[in-house]
Image 1 (cartoon, one colour):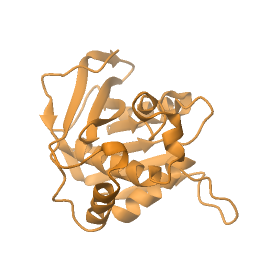
Image 2 (cartoon, helix red, strand yellow; image 1 turned 45 degrees about the vertical axis):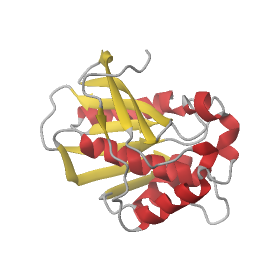
Image 3 (spheres, helix red, strand yellow; image 1 turned 90 degrees about the vertical axis):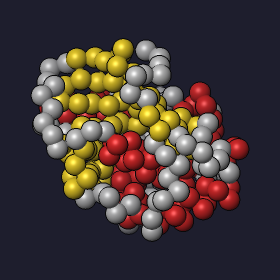
Image 4 (tube, one colour; image 1 turned 45 degrees about the horizontal axis):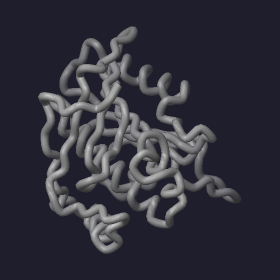
Length: 212
C-alpha cells in the first residue's frame, strides 16, 4: 500500500521549541544540512487509513512523516481494537539485519502486536538507510558519520508524532528495541526527557559496540 494524504493530515511543527539536548541536535541538523535537508519549515505527517489492516485484537496502519522538510520517516502504527484513553505510547526501534527490512521482521511485528493487544499504541519506524528510507537516501547513507544524529532526530520526531495522537498519555511514553534498536533506545532516553520507560534489548557490551 502506498502512503496517501489522509483526511487527518496535520502539521507536526518545525520543532523550533524543542528544549534541552533537543536544541543541540537541532543545531547539528542545521549546521550539517545533511543532503540539503533543512528543518526550517512546517513538517507534515500522513496516516493511511485506506490500508488499515485488522488482526486479532489490533490494527496496523502505514505512516509517513517529515522529520525535516523533504525527508520522510516511514513506519507502521499498531493500535488496540478496543482503545481506551488515555493510552500509553511506545516507540519500537529495530536493529541491523541483512535484508535491511527489519521493521517487517517477524520478531518486530510480534512485539508490536503484543504491546498493542495489551492496550498501548505502538509505532515501528524504519531506521535511517533501512527499509523505505533506502528509496530516499540509499542504503549507503546508513554508513555516513551523520546517520546516528539524523536517526536520533527521527526518533525524537516519532515521539512528536505519537504524542500528537488524540488520547496519548504524555506520562506513559516508552521506547524499546533490539541490537542497534537498543542503542537507539538508550540514546533517545538520555537526550529526550519525555521518555518515561526505556527497554534496550541485547545491546551494550564491555568489549563490542554493535553500533547503529
